Image (cartoon, rainbow, N blue to C red; front, side, top):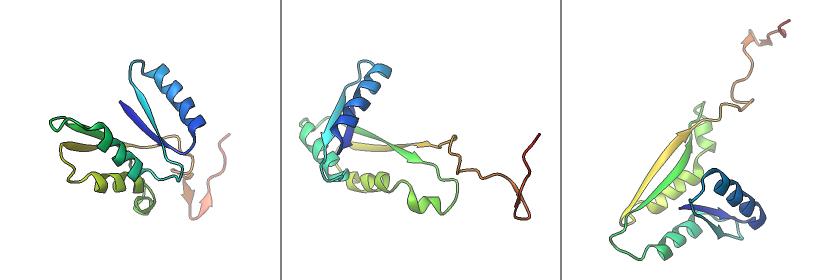
Length: 122
């Protein structure tokens, strides 16, 4: 089961159809949140679907691997908030999956020599 919290239903439906093409048989639940809130609607959804006290809920969250120390101040704020909100929730396991955007052009600026950019090759 995949849960997607959204404030844009049309974009979420497009995401659902792409996801179902790539992972057939996996249910995608859309939780609407008109105020762009993510944590409270997600936790509320878990509370509603968790009726069996013996059922264990596993929450898998993406966690961006920051390239620089200052990036840690900007990224993963929602992931950290969800982890805090789910901490101590009975029968709930929270895990993170690290990822890095390798194609990010801003992540690795061109090498410089004494502050001057290197000339283009060729």
